[in-house]
Image 1 (cartoon, rainbow, N blue to C red):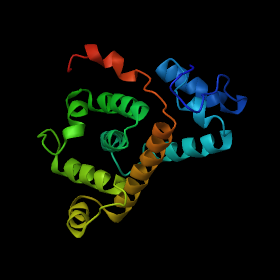
Image 2: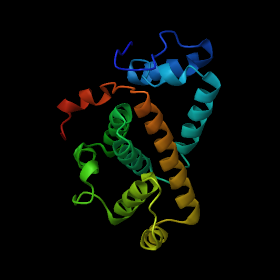
Image 3: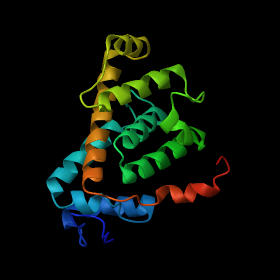
Image 4: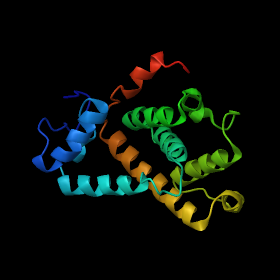
Length: 189
């Protein structure tokens, strides 16, 4: 992959220390994910980021897989990260088994598809992503109605991670990979 739009050029050869992650990406997505070609310039940092997201996506997470994908998709949109919107929308569609929520995330406040718990979490994601964060007492009270302190802490880490990832990718003009292109023929589209 060589994107002429990127002002920092992607690696054409991935460091051997990243081969295990690359093999997993190729198996799951059919190709090396675009960000790997930029993060791969600093393999140690790439592994730290991969371990962090791996922990957040663990089976025993305090957040459901759908909630994690929902929040990551929303933050991706707020940060205008083309790759992240693509990847996280695919993840949300897979976890929901339908496209309806994916298509409504950007306009979640006007949509009736989201539960009250999801709406509070989405409001929190927007508030944390704002610069500076905009978490008022009303939102804090709503969060406490639905989530424990431990869950709020993990949710905040997930949102902060997605901000890091989306801002890195957007700053370096990492393009969408077309992962959602396969969803167009989805029966729920």
